[in-house]
Length: 251
Image 1: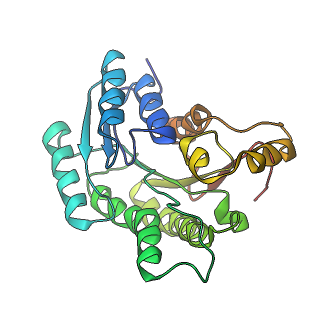
Image 2: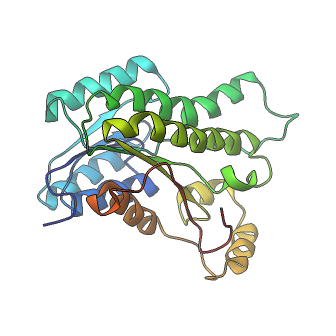
């Protein structure tokens, strides 16, 4: 038996990269998983198939989690499939979209970045907290960028993730008396499509070389931490923003 045997988990952005690794890891530890996606239906299908091959239940649900109506629909699908109680919520959906300086971004870009990274975390948490009882847990995926302001052209991304870290602390206080724990993870340089798309190779090599462990992290390593935080083994960990960056930066 895994450490999450029989639990119900919802993972936003759960079809690729870190989200996919999280979805599969939770299943390996015994959870049934709702894989939310928006732009990657093939990845969602493959993730569900891999979870089902582990003997767990899984569904893929398309939803733009920056849209309140879509969040409501996602919740309805979850209740239809698994009933009116969940145990684990992982707010993983997010994105950088483009690197833009202060003079380059406009109101539309501002709204895009803030909505996908922060608004989604707020309103998905609001929707699913009502399905959680004592022992439930919310895990938000923040970023090292929330600590150090991020790399060039990522001011809005870093700021949105900074909002996630603060929201995590606030919700830990608000929901703790209900027995619901809220924590966040702040990944550093993790080898995913995110950095394939937005970080130059020479920058990645420089950052990896400057990390005490001399390498990038892996999505599975983030997923392992999520599974631990979701488990009863972490029952007194609440309100933390936990760095996972190989020692590159400290909180």
